[in-house]
Each structure stands twice: as C-alpha cells, then as structure tokens.
Image 1: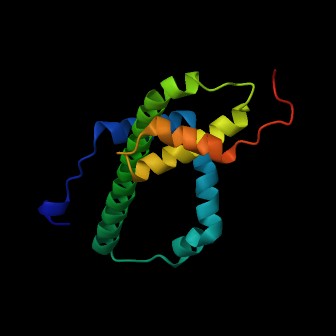
Image 2: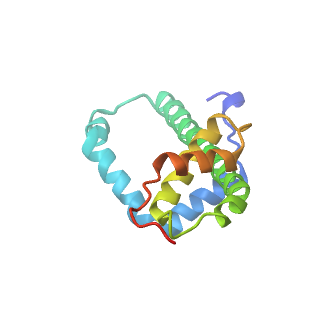
Length: 147
C-alpha cells in the first residue's frame, strides 16, 4: 500500500458508536454476521485468494467503505432525531390544546407522524397549522354530542 492511503481517520462519534454496538448489541451484530454468511459471504470466503498486496488493499478499501457508510448513517440518524425534537418542541403548544376526549391518542400520534414527515420536506410550513389540518382531516366525531 502506498503512504497516501495507509492512514485512516475516524470521528470520535463513530468510535463511540462502534464501542456502543459491541457492548450493547452483540446479539444483533451476531445476527447480522449470520445473515451475511447465509447470503453468500461464506462462499466468497471459500473462493477468496489474492496476492498479499491486493488483499491488503481490498481489506483497506472495504474497511474505509464500511466505516464511511456507518458514519454517514450515524449523521443521518442524528439529524433526523434533531429534526424530530425540533418538530415536537414546535408542536407542544398545539398538542396542549387538543381535547383528548374528542381525539384519541392514536389519531394524535399518527397525525404527529404525518406532520413531522411533511415538515421534513417543507420546514417553512407552520407546524401547528399542519397538525390541526391533519387532525381535522382524520377526525370522525362521535354521534353523541355533549350538551
């Protein structure tokens, strides 16, 4: 391997994620490995023969590709969670005004999910207005009306 590609840099976030996965999800990691082996990885291992330098290069690039993908996914999930938190903070005042007797929790939850999805696509929309529109769109008032 030449000197230009022999160094690998990892973010602390990625290192902590890998450590967390190993410590907290070993069974799921094992399941992923079993799935990979059953999906053809075992056969690749059997057929694998490369000159030492080519194998080292291939392993290096495989590790870089895997870690790069893992880092991208980590950032995507982090951004999605931050967006969800922001949306919920914007929607909390509106949620407080919803009459639980008229709107079941399931309807409110599904409406929140739809609004969150809409806000991801168009963050300039008014979250409260979208929530109320979604609730009204899915609302089926009961036949009994309070006096």
